[in-house]
Length: 439
Length: 145
Image 1: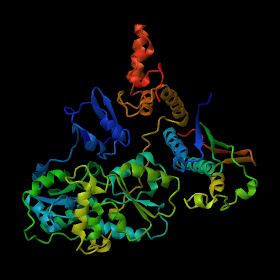
Image 2 (image 1 turned 180 degrees about the vertical axis):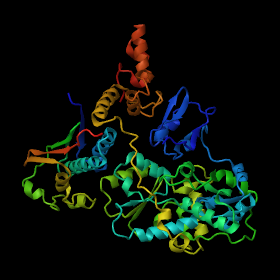
Image 3 (image 1 turned 90 degrees about the horizontal axis):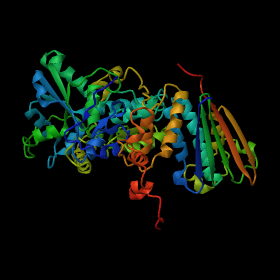
């Protein structure tokens, strides 16, 4: 299925520099005609390009706030990372109260649903080995998409469970329908998200379950709306009903800590995730039962739609959690039905990196790629629009680039055509072959 | 001619930080070929164990991998001390790895047994003072689809 990514390009602002293509963890961007193009199939919406673009040309397309008016009853689902964005606010209730002031009729904390799911996972992880170990969390959609395209042997390790925000959406809509008597489609459920991966996840649920979230607003946008209407001295209504375990999901280690077992691993940052997944794939982590993965540094507080530096947000989250009960929600009383939170199907491998229709075809291409790669300068300068000479060689063989896109190749050709001068005079200093190399 | 892809790796012997790099690269290549995931896993384990063995015991060596349409061959050759008693070395849990290496989590005596278990063909030749050559074959299913 072709999906519409939330990470997109602002064509006007893009200068065609090569910063994003070098930083993309899945080599999903190419520069063509002076603009960065995202290869849709490979993009996992991690937001790395949004962070690194010096021209702010990578933007995240969230939903417009005025879509609230399309619904009679509006529910806000704030991610726990939202609580870490505010200076001097030491009570979650003040933040939740702020959401009611800007147009929402009620709030349902994602951390509340997270507590219910943690409660369930605590039980299921003890059950007989009906899942491949280690069980890998499905909460970070960027990490799950990475697994789906790169780790065929790990798709069965991914916990087939909906994300806390999806559960929050289902429960809050049901609750609101019961309380107001409105039909469920008149009720709008809106996620306040720290990252683009979750915007895409809200539109196209990763486990293939039906869509349950009506819209996703960036944390930055909502922050701007409520920061002016709340203050630390007000006496808030008691709206929050989650504890340490739920709010802890905002930072790396929170989801694992809520499992109360010590054979887990909590990993953040895409490059670190890749290393750990390689190890798991090769069976090198036999003692680990559960793996929490967060594509962003420090966890969801590091998402590219947050306002605050992740480290500060983390400290604030820790402070907010200090005097809270450990957990205030149980799966049995809150949800009850395990089928409601379980994907219908196991995650499926999507071989976007496969080069050919069959092995023979792929081997033929790989040989051509290696041969080409040997002949390229190896500078990984990205002037061709691909992130590295290796990726460029692949692009040529796959027919999405031409050998002459390499500026060094082009120089050689120009020199051949003009038939004068020696080769060196056409090359920039790092590539000249004559003269002594200096030690 | 049937298409083949040959990969050559030179495994450094003294560098534990690089151990496993060749296996990781090999695995990346396999994922691009469309070889079924369970075969990728087996081949990667065979290569990884072999690579680690060469690093621990033989001061490195050379790996040649031939990927064809019907099988994968992994040939690991070193000029290490050789194995005096192959039968003994093939036993699970038998190890000659020194304590400092075992403390790193390597050398549990499962390397050779795993290589044999996960390959379809396993051949080992070794001569003390000359070196060891291991050849593993992993069969690929007939052209799918």
